[in-house]
Length: 255
Image 1 (cartoon, rainbow, N blue to C red):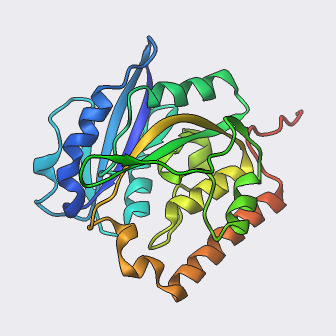
Image 2 (image 1 turned 180 degrees about the vertical axis):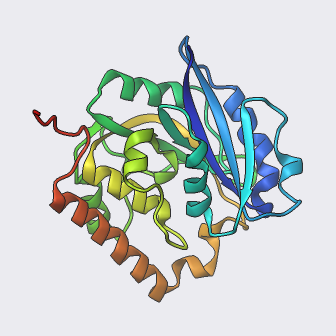
Image 3 (image 1 turned 135 degrees about the horizontal axis):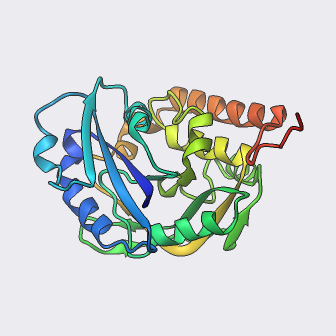
């Protein structure tokens, strides 16, 4: 019986044309024997503009739903996630060769690791790429380390939430993505780090497309009042999870 990695993608009409590039990058992934990927594409809304861009492949499932933002779309997709691992892939991004296999290897090698991240390059409109300094050391990321860094560095984490690869059960236990208009992926990253150890791969694991229509380039994304509220609730959730002491792997209780 083959084991599955579920790729979860939220999409809306402006980003739909990029699905072709995302699909191409998925098809270039090589996985160990016995493993396969299945791509869940969830439209944030119900239009006629996204479906024409969804590739015709039996490994892809496309669904639609009420508009609520990318976090809602991804969380709705979890209802159909029948694999052991969840990989995030935004509609406008791409996976470099080997990205899925590296994530999988990290979690398969250590049952105490709940999630993985990797190095990111910006994919610029002219096709060139740009990197960033300041990646963490390769290897394990201890519980609470992302929150500490994020708080001390102007709400910027040392690892990118768009690269997350996580155990399905852990992601479900945390309720999926936060119910926020933005930063919902950062909220998930900090919640994962509050409850489990993670992993960072120094090899490039994501090409993060920069284009005028992306949500993070809009002025409302950095509007001070809303941004402050988002950051406050993201931090509060992570700190409460840490204070409660629940974590992965769960402690075994003798009956």
